[in-house]
Length: 273
Image (tube, rainbow, N blue to C red; front, top):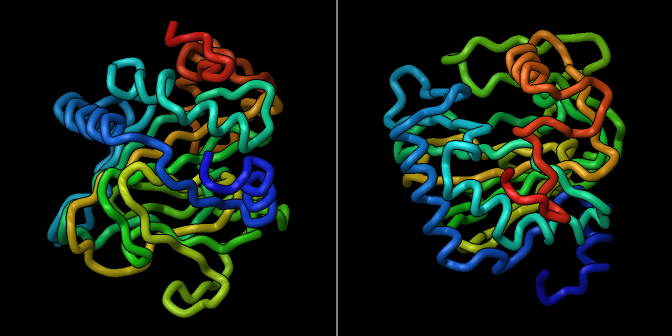
């Protein structure tokens, strides 16, 4: 996995809810993923989102659940080292793909990831993680910052809108507001300088976000979200109805493990079907 043992990385992940792994992917995987994003931009999927702020100097947009149509993403999901790495880190008997999700933030963009954690955006519960893969060099100020250990408080926070460009309201009972965090100066926060091939793996309940400011250069990121064998599909609320209805239409049953064609088991691999 890295120079540290699997056991040490597992413990770091359990305690902090995030771990930085070096040299996970070779240059061929980075180039392949970039080609996949370019292909996806030319043929946007059903869930393409443009979150570019009005007056922004650059675009901020993403798409998800496009691996069935983008061969480069299929290869990354099924053939790269990522799924076996997740299985070791989570000590999982099975690993399911929950979502492939790329982000493009152009130079000059003023919109970025808000302070949030991922689980309230998704219709799943259980042992889950996100693998965040930058396709360019990242310094600690231009990547993501995390609050270590925040996944362990058992609190689910409101899903925050990524921009005013797309309507989104996720205020619901059972969720709490985001805590006030000084992203610039809070000494508890952690971030990393990253090279292409490095990745961050974090629990879907770990609080994180991007530092405010104008994007100095164009960045491409790929996020792959995975669940272990205890993951269950549980429609969350009105704010996720579009995606939960879509999965149900594909045959996914509530309160059951991932079982439709869009949510394949990737370790041990069944192949793309």
